[in-house]
Image 1 (cartoon, rainbow, N blue to C red):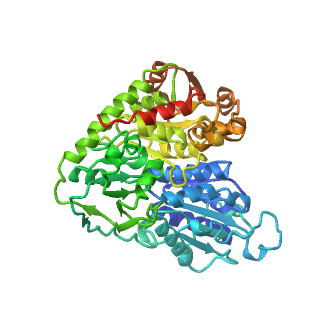
Image 2 (spheres, rainbow, N blue to C red; image 1 turned 90 degrees about the horizontal axis):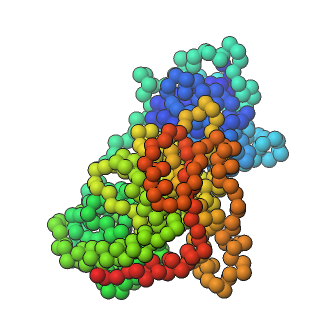
Image 3 (cartoon, one colour; image 1 turned 90 degrees about the vertical axis):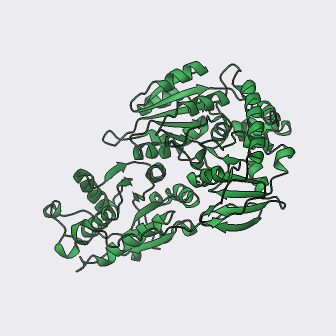
Length: 553
């Protein structure tokens, strides 16, 4: 057995032993030993292999698989620009703390700096974005033991489990494929792993966190950012504090979330009386929250692990876990609830009873369509913000997952992320809600080979032919009207139906709430795209009216 074949098989074997169940592969020559070992592992049922021709799409597919499963997922590339194309997904994984393993095949180290084909310096290619960098040098001969290779895999998987991406850079020498007699040959006994399929290093047991007791008294709100989990909701319920939860927090259920918090933070009668904020997760969605966390008259307490969201450098304390002893009373919470109910009623009258179809109606319909145990992946820009206002309340215990790439909040890779998340949760009815530019940006994600796993997934595309979020920001002021369409709105005039036809994906257009609801009620198989056509000419004016809808009662 040649050294490259032995190395590829040992690495795949140890990844499986370490609990990796999904691997994404982009084809290449230098990674051939890994590709063949992965194909064999998939055939045996040891792992599930996903092949994609575009490495950027492959990276985000792996990201979605990891987010959906909460387990490390490996993405494999060949050398050169192939490895560089993983960088956007690696950055998102870093800021969102997703266990993504970038396994980059490389040329032997002596070729670096020689201008050899497809050879660049891949050492620490992703810089500070990864939690660890591990390199395995190309072996000259098959070693007497696989201990060093297996220990390297153990270090990589352990680092990924702490929350974040890792790079495993592996150099391979020719020959890159096995000889005919070695194709079906088992690993030599000298390269075998631990007995009975055990990993080289057993994972460290989780240590229970001892929560710090937060004192009652200060007028407190709980902010639940992206991926907060249920701890934020539980604290808010125990203390009877208002819960300001983003849609992808995993905490926006139960009785304490304030749906219109973003608008209510504009009311001095409520916002100015906040004395303390307890922050979970990674809140990035709204400027009112950022301003709240930057106030010098508010005590900011973070819960969880570093790094913490601290835009104003005001963080006063951080704890791994917190609890309270009893309730703070219902008075403060009821003030927020009354204002929320009044504002929500005004908001619904303003946007839900309008014709034709508008983005807030689309967001409400999508939110209603997510059933128990369902999955919703939301794109950045306006869709996640519209959902933030219009999401329907969900009961506790129905295990819905609402997910968004809020690590760096880019529009790239959302199609692939959604497909990965849906593949990770095959028993979930899966939806994705995104804008047309976000959809187009990653339309390569729909290029899926005939032998690849495909999820049942409906994409709802809020189609307004452009980037309408900019009309709600400073750039949308009339002072910049002459340049706005070309350099901010960026219309494309792409026919989404023809694009989907080229990809072999079902496509339907809806232009009313009833039509959208009817399509979403139909549980179709496979991937389909629902294009909800909306306008954007009045987006800035409508947003100003929405902000003005905030009221106390």
